[in-house]
Image 1 (cartoon, rainbow, N blue to C red):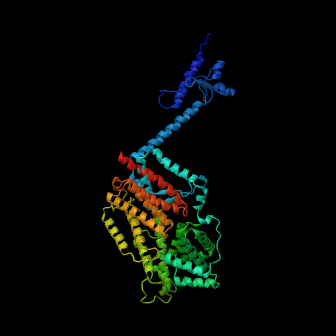
Image 2: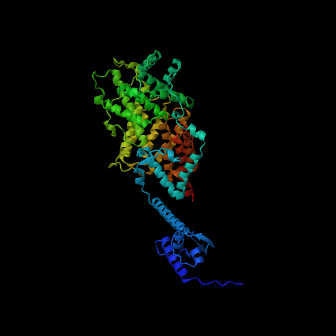
Image 3: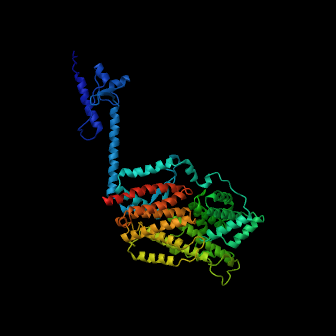
Length: 597
């Protein structure tokens, strides 16, 4: 038996037409070609009343507060009217996604290499997996090597799907979240682990042993202390003297020496550092040569291990105090009433060169302006006496005293800093008319200076300062000269080969140094990272990929990452670098696959 259905009233048909026009215009601003037909709602249909195209409810349902839904014949089910609003929102999201992807594709198709290299950066040093722990972004400049990361990222975009770039970031975040809690605790700086200050001192025998370690390994490059004077301080302390300067210096020497004995001594080192830090206000008050000497010891310790205050900020105090005391210029370093005696003069020169070395090094790593003159020619302070400390007294320097090999090594290290400053000032600061490319005579002149520095390196093995140590610094300068810089954003093939070869050599020199236990500072971790980035940038060059197989390059990278993973237990930020470089290398290696196709 069939049931005869009555024809729909005209008001239903008019409502449908109006609703079709409204929905079609809402879903797109262009003339609609295909759109969803919105029929009268089931309530109005059953009541045979006029229905309008109101959203999310029609007028009658809105006035009565009733649920408004309609029958969708294409889906074969009843849907709420607000489903149309959901579709409109979805269309907007898809249009935004299309626009985002088109912008990304335009960047890939036409990257501005010059801008990638010259652009400075703001880097967040907080934990990006925990929004509550995010720190204020910090300025990082071009000499830091941040531009290398941008070039590698740009290259990987050309060789992998755009979505894979997001996967690199997401993969890092996931691995950080899944990292075992115990390993995260191990990687935290020791000053957060509840270590208490040690206001006592070890036995005199142990103290003398630690002082010997400091003099042989820390004092060799940074002659901050006059050894006979300091050893007299130690005698005074063990005889009951509680002079704050003497106590501070002994505690910092013990802390620095203990850092050289490995992870098992880290907590003890931190105890002496905290005991010294408790006196900081008393030490800072005089603002004299002894204050500068104490701050230099703080800088030396902070380079070796994470501390309560970052070395960059401690160093800022040291630089300003050095300038305030007149130690940064030859014409003022000897002023005084009365004039300084020979020992004081020598200490002033030592402290200037030590602070200048710290400042040049840290400013170079962070890409930030130097607190001293940026043009190296303005530094006219002479070197200190190249003889052992026992020959330098307040009465004068003993005539005929033989040169001290350790002092010569430290002076040679400071000459390296001057070369580094010259390269940085020419290639990484304000643009210059020349050099325009790496075939400019400036490069030949600078490379000759660097090679002369290497050939003039003092011989012999002194506290880990071997020929390999000097060669490692030489390779760092070569990388610094020939990698992309704001002055030369697109190096030649010859420069790329030099940079790549120097980076590979440094990976294995760094492995050798690490296994010998002579390096674990944050500067060392930075140097490994820079070598890695130079290798990854190198394989963006087709010629490099022809000369070095994927397996060989992967071995270089794995060797360096293995060292960084161990250093990550001491320097927490290194763990993130290991993960990100690992993800970037996987992306960069896809260029080899592209070559095979």
